[in-house]
Image (tube, rainbow, N blue to C red; front, side):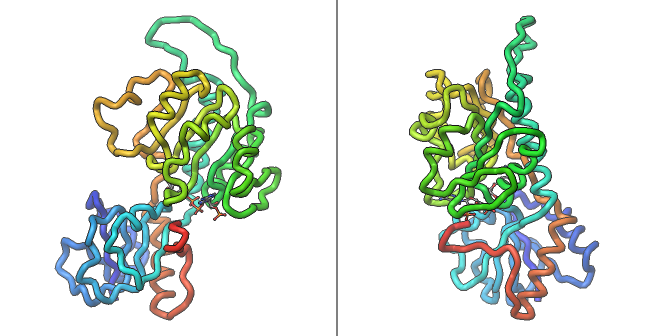
Length: 306
Ligand code: NDP
């Protein structure tokens, strides 16, 4: 039995090294290597090109090498009779916690928006953590980790998810309570999975429900945001600005308005990346479970889309 790696960027070496280091007896192959497709029972992928699984008739598991799984469902030829998995990893959560905390502090202290290049000595009023309410849209693995971190430094925090959550000191809002949740979110952090239901959720209607001067942080997927609605809401003064790590089209086109927008801080999808040495352990554990017919860890529901 072999594990097949498929990545759009073909950056295989860190993964092959990590598997080798963890268990040298494992057979790990890539599409470019000479291998027997019938021996492949598990495929671990990141944005596999459409149709990549054709010819692998013995696949039992297809997994995402990251936390997000929208790239799996983007392939209409994704086999139906396989189990789907994703990555849940403390390092991934830790990196996301630090990234969002950095952005929240950057925003409330105006660090990014001082225009140093204009040689202007112009102090701005700033906010204190205890007076700022952060709403986390998508209160799952990463959302809860980020929420707990923000809470620990003194921010007021709420989370919004399909089902109610019980996290110390953080109010949990469910699907039907979106309006109440938005009304108090001075900083809105999107950490939703991209699904049919959440696509385009960051739009004009939602922005209107945020308090005046609210700030958006999107570290989930570009497909959540209606970019023109964001620009309009900043333009008309309702939103203060935004920090965006993800975009509809990545990399961002050279002529995109975000590059030079004074109220939009952009980063190239770097909030939190899978770390091969820590992630291979759970993949190998699932490979073992698959072989023994045991329930897998970190499964994904094709019905829910996440
Ligand atoms: P989880 O599946 O653990 O959490 C998703 C959360 O969203 C859950 O709380 C879920 O609710 C909620 N949710 C989903 N659909 C709805 C809906 N229709 N209405 C209300 N709530 C909903 O995912 P993770 O926290 O692990 O990851 C979140 C996303 O972060 C990933 O899908 C990925 O796109 C993105 N990401 C971005 C990275 C970056 O570098 N920028 C890095 C890693 C991930 P419930 O719990 O009730 O099911």
